[in-house]
Image (tube, rainbow, N blue to C red):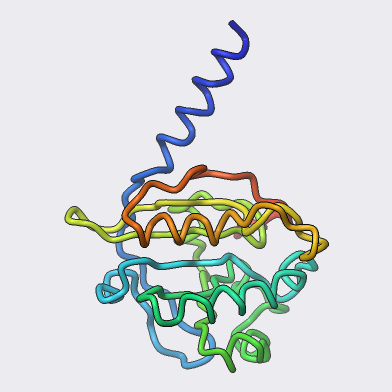
Length: 192
């Protein structure tokens, strides 16, 4: 009976995320100073947002893996962006965000979530945490939310690439499995 109860809780949580509709959000790219809107990415069938910050050591561990995923899907009609929920803090302001050269040089926008609108709407809680948004006939919805892979500290020891698998599933018009994973990293600080 206990297993059945755990299954129901897990199924309910997955059901809440899968297909969760996304309202249009407009965030400013720290590199260009230009607004980026989810609704303006209509040509991108799949959008990948990775919650990131300048001061989280876990985010630094994933830089090369994020670059590799960006390169892998650059010709697949996939839009990648980093989202900083701490851009309201002095140590994470726009000038400091502009110093994230690996993302700037790769052409990955670094979006400022100064009011934490994206953070609240997606329910992300950790840095780094990935959100895959797909477009459909009724608008945009979350297809996957969670960890990038199953080993933050050692890329060589990764045995499950959750984000890569989710992107592949969405591109194949399938439901990612799992649709939700537990991200490991730094906690997101809320605006006071």
